[in-house]
Amino acid sequence: MEHIEEKNRNNLFLMDNSANPAPLGLCAFGLTTVLLSLHNAGFTPLGSPILAMAIFYGGLAQVMVGLMEWKKNNTFGMLTFGSFGFFWISFATLLILPVLGLTKAPTPIDLAAFLGVWTLLIFGLFICTLKMHRLLAFTLFMVLLLALLLVAAQLTGSTLILNLGGFAGLVAGLLALYMGLGQVINEIYGSRVLPV
Image 1: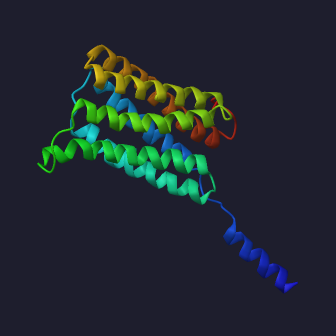
Image 2: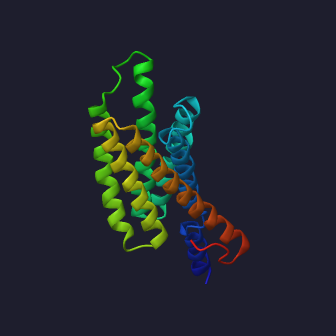
Image 3: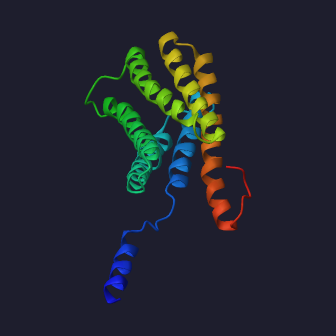
């Protein structure tokens, strides 16, 4: 009997009673995407608020969420949040290095290639979401559209295409924010207050 109680106590330590990390990842992605998209849509300059958000909230917070999703055995969450976290850190670094004099500023072709390889990953993630929640699938579709428009803007130099990408990013970011906050609101209220 004592052996069984000891085994049950040990199993409690193995159970995952941690909080759901996805809302943090969704909010970090959403707010950072909205902030950059305000710039791409032509409303704000590209400055320190965007870079700081990209490094810390969009970047480090999502990398941490990716690690937490790994711990919860969620491969999709690990790949998605971890990748987007490192995307934001890479994006900020890409802009900061030339200012520090450590490398030349990227050309439009460089930026198109950078965004193009990320577009491949986003397409794969979008394919995964087709077997998941429809709102998540639509959000990833908007992220995919955003990435395609940003690549096209770099290749063509078109401000109109860049602005359209900004508006696609605003939709994607707000949807991610809605899903993140919706999960927390539903958990706090103990019922499905918001459809997520």
